[in-house]
Length: 342
Image (cartoon, rainbow, N blue to C red):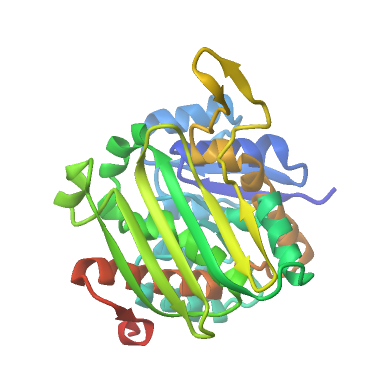
């Protein structure tokens, strides 16, 4: 079996999961190198991921003689730069979402990619690989609910993660880039049109630290699409009960709902507290299968020489919308997408 040799940049909470998937769960991939600025993470890679070649410098890892591709799970503000350097080194690229928190950087990456048309570049919108979300798309294509005209989608994290997220606001771009970029991508995917204008509302209602940084812990954004369709996209860092991500698609002949209620499984508990279902603790608990399927698709795309659906163009369009969301939140007004384009 032909295998793809991969280098992994970033070994934080999510990077470790990517490392385990690549090394132990994808049969046609080898994890041959890792890069991190944290010495303990490099030690983890040697012991737990069985990788002997570790680097504290990204550019040095790109010079690894037996590497075909790089998987980038670094801080959001470095994604664009790291993608470009990998392409310049002749490497295929998978990068976690978002492509960037700046529209101009997204466009620069797209321009650079035109010089390297032989390379596969994929951005990680893992919900497109979740079996339930995939089935919803298939149902729409089969016209079982008519033409979608309204999407309600939200990304909601358990409150215990909020203090951890405060330190990442400056590099992640804030709640719209970090949370809602997934909801934007799904709304575009299901509706089949582009956002025309939007209006953001929200605030730091529980964790004032986000407000001090110009960000929020709870938001909603109303979007109007070019074809007249609508979307209401929410984000929250303050769920007391678990990770609550769901999407509802209303069509002219029916409705689809994915992930509501946010049950961990199909077990119903009846005890002294009442009748209930347990909820997933984290986004990874909910979407661990999709993260694996996503990277498997990247590996297959490289080995088969096919461009993936989660490409740079889709990633740029998602960032354009999340930049508009951020602008609307700051200005407290309606933002036209055309007005924020460079």
